[in-house]
Image 1: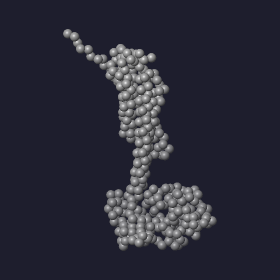
Image 2: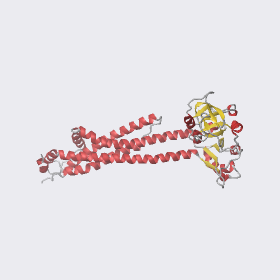
Image 3: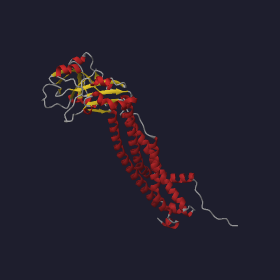
Length: 400
């Protein structure tokens, strides 16, 4: 009784050896083809990693600054003119039970700030002058870059603390008795310079002086224009709903209440849109790399007709040939993918270290990048593998 012949099977280990041997015989071409894949994957992982590291740094800073700060600002009345809050608004807000800290600032109008008295009056430089409470820095989680903050002694005298942008604009990088700026018609000694204040950005481009000296030297009316309020975390929403009416019972509609951390999160969300755009660029680079792999494999098929014909003559089936070239494309893409992951992680680590960020490369980005690479490799190898498998032994061997 005759037995039916079955086509030979090729083991996976042998398939990998044969495909790997073919790639090793053309190292320069393999490196150049894999480089296209590596650039695409590195770009995608780098974008995700840097964005994620920046977000981790943002979350860390926001946790340190706190999300329980609410800002109460005077808005405008029904006639469109600037409104004002009562002088006692901070005291009324402090009576709300969940409120832990209250600090006010008052914009001193029509007062320009200069480095010296030789600058034309019309060139104000956009620097605001604020009368501030002594506990303002603690309430808004601000920090000093140089010098000291206002105290009960200095708030009564012409001393000033500069915001970061103000100090840069005026060209001041130190503090001391010999460092002075002109605020209105009076000279003020610079005793401190603030770091950036993310929760109170108006302070960055302003100068801060004591409430008493603002009244005595600059004719400040004493009305607060912004009140910063710290609330127990679980009560932020409830307190927010009553702050306007508490700050100005007679005209709650003329008061604006906001949460600075929400604005910071909105900015972070806008940055995410840009990250999405960069991810798209990385995906395009990956596709271009896939085209490079397909091109390399097509050329390989053309150059190896004799090898294909010999293998077919020795019993290799069309399926064997197809699997071999698919495996070569797969391995080529995998080399590029692993290289791209390493490059992307290294780029993220270097950039995050330069910015003093925590390094954060999500596992899904690494795994997704490798899977995308292998998918592109298989797709790129389909046509060359099919073309190689369709060659007949006689046609392939007859090709010079």
